[in-house]
Image (cartoon, rainbow, N blue to C red; front, side, top):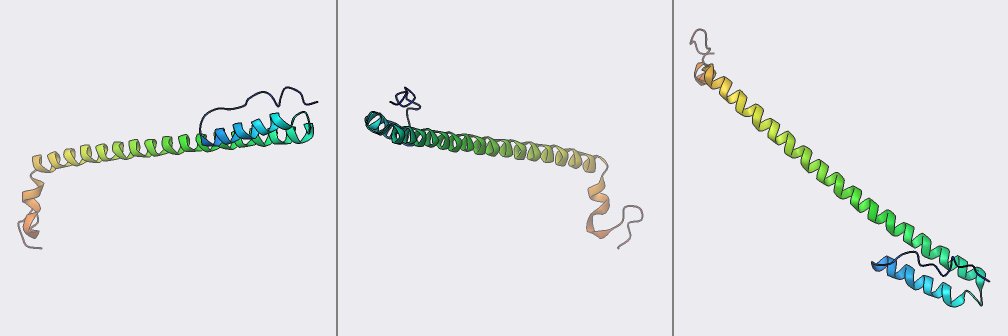
Length: 112
């Protein structure tokens, strides 16, 4: 006789979990006539549940990684814009743009 491990439901919800539930139903139907096979079928259902959980966890991990990468890119762009703005203010305040334009050196005004 098979113990109540075969009778206990493991999972519910989702397409893979529904398949695992169907496999568990088969285990329940055969537990009296073929107890060893019923335990193997139940173990298959549990492995399917674990595979489904692994896939779901990997999906969450991947999405978290994508969110983190997007956040880092946003931070880098923000820092670049801040640095670019500070550099622009510095160059404007030191009159760097007018001193170096047209290929002339700032200290002598001679063509390079």
